[in-house]
Image (tube, rainbow over all chains, first blue to last red):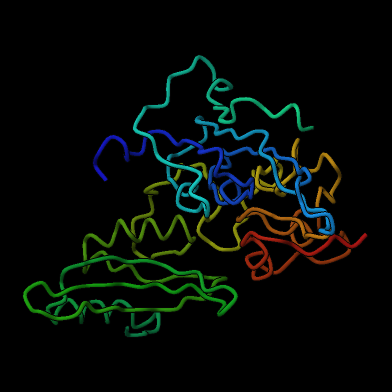
Length: 111
Length: 193
């Protein structure tokens, strides 16, 4: 656990693995994770099947001004969608700018 | 673990020290609210010159007036642990050092008591209040949210508003055990409207 890759410097979202289950946001003792998501119908179901929906992640943000790098979110995620990264969090000019948006482009087409 | 009364506490610690268990390991406190209405003080000492198991000494103090003799005259290192227990649990150590170890001198409250409410958090928007599939600010779509069949989540340290904070005015204040039980986080009872 001493290599830079596994050191406690930065937490990254692996977006495809995230199911918007909210577990990390609820377990975070610093309340630094914000998640927005919406549901949309699952396409391509057999004709007789009943409608099903899935969660789509719209926003995942970590506020580095609140985060204490405890790693509870990384530990708790049941889908391994959060991981430690060796890079440092970058200095910012304001506390607002320390809110790191981790979902690159909100899926505007699906709303 | 040997259980002693508060009156026997100091003498029991002295006896352990004389029996060769003169290496202080730690002293701690447990809030047993919900099981018994008391704090349990635990002292652990070791004998470094013999291959003996560490000895644990335990003592129960009433929650409404927790006082116990200091053992810092027997084990000097215990003074720090006692100061920590004193400020975090509000336990008084008779003959102990009164100054604070960790907390601000102006800070009021006993943060490790289980009925201690994180009052500053009761007025904040908790990011975890949203359900999967919910966007915007929590409560934006009303108290029901996107999944009206599910009971609302509250964060740890913030009691169910029905118990503390938004309690019906005609009801007497909640007992400490009820506050502690409801502040564990999780889903809360549906609001009666």
